[in-house]
Length: 372
Image 1: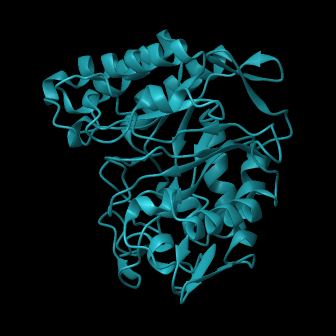
Image 2: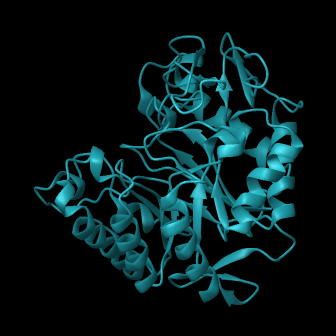
């Protein structure tokens, strides 16, 4: 079922804008077909080219949906040729909410983590995987958060509260006011100790082992699963332009060169990156081609695994999908919303009933799938 594993960076509104660390990624295979593999800069499935046009849906794995709802979620993707979904494989919390906001994959109490395999824990994620498999959708599963939402790497600050999404007042969404459970719970002080503190590293490795052994493990335990970066894709080219300057602490090329990394991931959010709106199209095309060039240099595939603009400008979305298609690469937009389930509405959410979905997202998805 699993295609790739990844950590992820999110801000309090559940949208990724910046990250200062390499992120490990787990890609999950759904459907009974074989494992997705890499061949140079391309993906392959059962010996045939596999070009990804997919989406993101963090809420699928963080809210306790019924099996019928999960079927609706993944059938909506499959019906519209969205072949890959990125959803979260972490919920590192210090308390349990009220259903349906009671998903906890790892509960922390006084510095001791307990991995929850019950129906509101990894038992629920089993249902997510089963629904994806039944629909023929592949999954990319982040296993820890560089930001604070739903736990995270560094330190815990407060207990969960509830936030009412503006789109759907009849649904509340748990927003975790926490900044990094792992480090704080294990006696550390700084976010980056996630990578250096032996207790923290051991706790995270234990969670990964428990999580993926429910399906299969990555690399050391099972070479079939791909490992990706999951970062924003910031570069380090000695440029004066922030995104290329290395100031963020991310070096896309250096991370992609790591032997155990199978493919690179990058994001595109010009609204939050000080790009002039009049340049969104041209900026995005350059951003895409620069990362594709990095992939060619490393001999590995790259995926624009998150992207969006707040205005939902169809011209921008089409231009970017055309650029990725022309480069023979892959992409996953942020993020799918399903009107019938009244799912959370963020700045970049595109509902299955929106004009942009019908006019731009679906045609692009069909185009990519036809190429595979």
